[in-house]
Every structure is written in structure tokens, then in C-alpha cells.
Image (cartoon, rainbow over all chains, first blue to last red; front, side):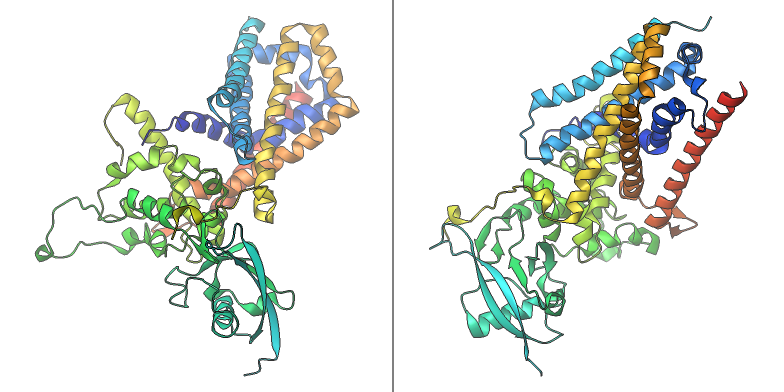
Length: 120
Length: 251
Length: 134
């Protein structure tokens, strides 16, 4: 029987799922509700200067790319499986498309944090 | 015996000689509080319609023969009780995800083939003979595999598993739980030989942890755990085989 | 018995058959919202890279009622994802023993939930400290 390549995608899926389970709700709350409304946290927590400094910082870059990449790999892997669950025939093309989007998103994130520059 | 209450049992009927597709037939069965669905079916066969066909044996949930869908839930008919469906009645159908042979009887040959594939027997490390004495095992060592050894091959987990229904090549929860039962047994040394099945797409990787298999298992085997634990083992094996190419690595 | 006379039933809309399957589908669908949130962050990152004007416009769009409503929905589903992920965690682990006794699945879930709550509150506390004092 042929060895499956699932372990690669499953590991990324698992890492993303764990990160989403440990921090996901709070991240959504902070960036999408609290800060924009100034509720519990000040509105200027996400202002340009602060975010730029965060993105220029090595740890900040890692955090940004990790969250985006792992959430994408987690979500797209599961959505790909959802198609299969709905009875849609999923072949190598759809598999490449879904995981390709996750890879593309990761590369874009890496490119952007690099373009933003480094701490002076 | 006060048999003044009756309940309607609607059974799926399918005669391969005459039917193009299954149909339903309802029977009104007098019952008492202690009667199982199996006893209801036996009443029908003995007194109403001798052509109704179904499997059964021990009547006490150890043989695994009487699995069927009762109101859409995979159940052992010998430990499902008619009183719980009164007065609305119940519908009895053969286990889902299996081809129907006749009435409530399904074709289990796919499962039996898969069971053979997982090598469900002790493959010992040493070539000990009975004269040398028995294998020794602590209670703790037995605890590692005990629940998985309770499997009675009733196939309720296969009826519960949508991935088995969608992908019939999936080895399935029951066979994989038995695979794990032997891997987890301290007397066994056959893990490497079973890795090929574990690592395949049809092995653990067809499982999406729906978890309904463990929910319906009448013996507390928890096949969901057996399968998903082995995803970690399979992943370790996958990465190790890139670093140290050798068939079926990691203990 | 003629082999080709066994009857194979179609799967159909199997996820509608019972509550267990339905909640499994909701669990799986919650992944869509994890993906959408990642895309929101990616867009924010892009706007950050495009300079203060673009970034401030994006920040302003986050404060609109539509965006808030969207994020409330995302929050609910990401929270549901977190809960179902933690609840299923014991199934992915071998038996855990402390001093010879097996730790129950309920205990493992409780620890996982506690870890998640502590991590998230620590995150909020850190951001509040950064936000209000510096």
C-alpha cells in the first residue's frame, strides 16, 4: 500500500488548529472588536507607528507570519476535506489549489514582512 | 405475562431474487418491557412472517452478530429495547455503508478482508515455546490495550463512520482499533509489519475524527482514539523515513 | 447468491441524518472563519506595507458596523473551533498516567481549556499593559 503524504499537511493543520485553539478567539476579539471600538484596549494600540515597530521587530515578524501561515494551512486543509465530506470528488488539482493558496498566502506574508524592513 | 401493548416495527425488506430496490414492511408486535428489538424481530419471524431475515446469536452483546440501524442509530438489536420506542414505533434497517444481501443482513466481506490486512494476532519478539512458560505482563501493560481488545467485530463503528461510507477503501475504525490493540500489547513485536497499513491513505489518513464510531461502540473500545493516536505515530514514521530510509521504522 | 444482487445504498446528504453529524459539519465549517481571519490579517499586513495612508484607511474600515458584525461572527465560530479542538484532544493522545493512574479524558479537556483561557487572558493583560501604559 502506498505511503500517504498527509503527515506534512496534517502537521501544519495541527499546529494551526492548536494555535487557533490557544489564542484564536482573543486575537479575533482584540484586532476585530476591542481595538477598533476602543473597548478594554485603546484604539491607538494598532496605530501605524506601533504596528510598524512590531512588524519591524524579529519576534513580531515571526508572530505575524506564524499566525497567518498556520491559520491558512489549518483552515484550507479542513475546507478541502469538507468538500470531500460533501461528496464532491476531490482530486490532485483541488488538493493543489487549496494547499497552494495556503503556501501562496504564507509567501506573501513573508514577502510583506521583509518589505516592511527591519528595526533601526 | 401482560402482552396487551403493541408496538409497530417497520423493517427494511429486500429480496435479491425479486426486488429491484429495498422497501419497508410494518408489523405490529405485542411486547413487554423486558423485550429487546431482537426479540421483537424473532416474534415477527416466528408468528407473523417467516421470511424476515436477520443475524443474531448470543442475545447478550458479546457475539457482535445482531448489529442493525434502529431509527437511524447503529445498535445491537439484543441490547436495544422496544419499550424505549413506544408508542411512536421504530424503524429497523441493515447497517449503513454495507451492501444489503437480504432484508437486515449485510455483506461483511470487505471488513473481513481488511481485518486480515492488519495482522490481528500477536507477532512475538522471541520464539518462545509453551514449554518455556507463559509471557509475563503487568496489569499496567494490559491496561494499555485492554479496552481495544473488547471489540466484538459488530461493525456498528463502520455504520457510524461517514468516511467509510464516502471512501470504501478506508480500512475503517474497527480494523484499525484492532491493529492498535496488537501494537499496544507488550507481548507483540509486529508494529513495523503493520506500519504499511497505518501509513497508507486508506489507513489512519482517511479519518477526519468525526468520532461517531466511539459514540456507538457497545463495548467502549474507543476506535476514534486508536486511529487518531496512530496519526502521530504515522507522522513520526514519515519524517523518520526521510532521515533514515528503512521500511516501517519507529517503536 | 448472485454477487451483483446485493444492494448498495447511496450516501446522500448523510450529514443531516443526526445531531452528531450536524455538529461535526459545523465544527469543520468553523475552519472557514479561521481562514477568513487569516486573510483579514494578511490584508492588514499589506496595507501596513503600503504606508500610513493605506493602513489608516484599513484601520478605519475595521471600526465600521459591518466589520464589527463580521468579527463577532468570526469570534463565535473561532471560539467554537477552539472548544471542539480542545474537546477532541484526548482522542489524539496516548493514555497519560501520573503515578500509575490513568488521567481521564475529562481531566485532559479541563487542562486544555484552562491552558487556553490562561493564554488568552495573559495575551489580553499584556496588550492592556502595553496599550494603557506605554
